[in-house]
Image 1 (tube, helix red, strand yellow):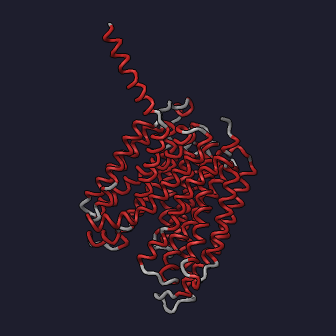
Image 2 (cartoon, one colour):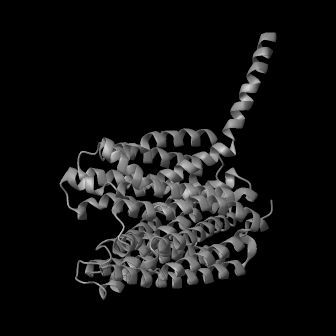
Image 3 (cartoon, helix red, strand yellow):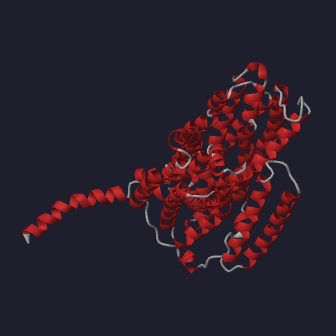
Length: 490
């Protein structure tokens, strides 16, 4: 008997340590951060490998680009459905499933013997990424206190920016040293680490009574996925040049929106409760998120042409200068989280968008005679404003959502950003091409003056859009202060 008591006493400290470790907010945030890093890295690291894939498979660019498109389309089409499913069956098992699926698909990508099997594996990888992206934001409310929500959102934003920044450079090194397969296989050890941390640290929550009684809206899921896929394809095919196919896809997307709306009004357990979108605070925040993402895409689409043609920088210097924006975003996101916790989401949303307006305005005044400074200073202002808005807006939206809807609202938040990026890639590219045409010496020769003029016109448009996002944020904050972290009850 004494021995049993001694054994029990001896094991008590170990049980306490295990329990404390399993419920550690630090480990939970670490796992969510790694999941965010994996999903963003999956996008950026593949882009740098396209030339190698063209050579390896002897395929044209039009075929190889589907390695990137399949991943983005899977995320865009399925992210809302992933969030809704998680609200019903539990977020922890689906997030773990998403990490496992992403990791397994990374293995399949790295071992793919043909291009089309690689593309299929990338679509599966995108499904895993959709689960991770939809659920990392939703999990924040269950891992940190409301007073720390802003800091947690800032950390996730920083990890997303780091993944975007790290992808091209890491991918280039891996391809140079080990070949193209390494850019996918590198995800495997990171995925295993993320899965282990998430299994240990993420809290398990019982389904809400409402969620347990609901059935999954299969019809709504299919309609939304097809609609979003049609829109995404319309914006990406043709590389900014609209033709009959693009117009047909846009028409199909419009019809899909109507059919989806009708289906949601008739569904017993709709994928998206349309009444939620009537909430001005939520709909204005989602719209502002979409517009801001559209604006930020201009920095990725237009800036390389301005730096290379307008300023005459070589490829290495273009890469270094382009890394300024993501680096500022990553560092700013951590600061933005603390500012949001201290001053509240509403104030920081407005401040962030004010910075974005000023940054894009400075970019629209870019003068080649000022050299690199004409880009670095405005882009730093722009990216700081973006990080501040993104962090505070995410915290505002997720803090005002009931536990049973966090997954689907997180999915909507990520969806609005993805749609903005897709729209921005097409819209801003088209504006730049049109604005620089009159200044070109020939059809294929982009002069310094043409690049500078295209840059100015594109960011004049971006400034107008940033002002529109600022007005949407003012509408959101004035509609009610419930979205403010500081106004939430402890």
